Length: 197
DNA sequence: AGGAAGATCTACT
DNA sequence: GTAGATCTTCCTA
Image 1 (cartoon, rainbow, N blue to C red):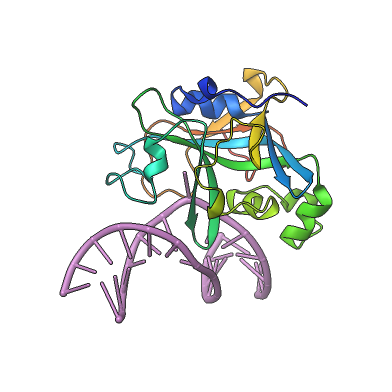
Image 2: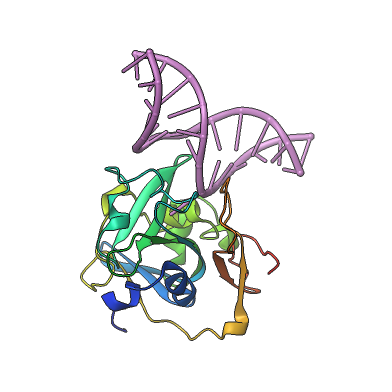
């Protein structure tokens, strides 16, 4: 199996990281077997100047990872769901990328059991759904995703042609930035929702 | 101590 | 398409 993506991958503008994470593989090591899926939908979040970011309002105990080391997990809860982000920013910056949807690859039966459904398309096509399918919760906060020794890491997947990528405003936020910061693989059936450019 | 908001999900019509 | 459940965290007192 391939190596984990190196730390340098995440030491860039969150928007660049969000786009480049499309097509990569998220791997969850559970007991002695693997659950994995290809990342098909992401969103970029910035620092205190981003009204939709959890960094808005300054550093708190729960959002500290956004100021921390790129390539680590940032996990927090909304509406009773855990959401998985990857810390991503330029040196001395603040930011993270939300993983919004996966295309399931390995361990589909286990994911189905974790989710309590046999509908493959609904296994991991949303930020709260994929964390449940892969058994990701707050205990994995700030875990290093650049190490193959971690229970959660990211490896290279397939190359995505820029023309395969669609984008839209971020979903579920009340006040968004002018720039469209949600990215997805066009036509992929595991994207949470298809939107126009 | 209590209330409200929020990067969501499910079930139902 | 809409309503209600959900639960962590923050803000105010």
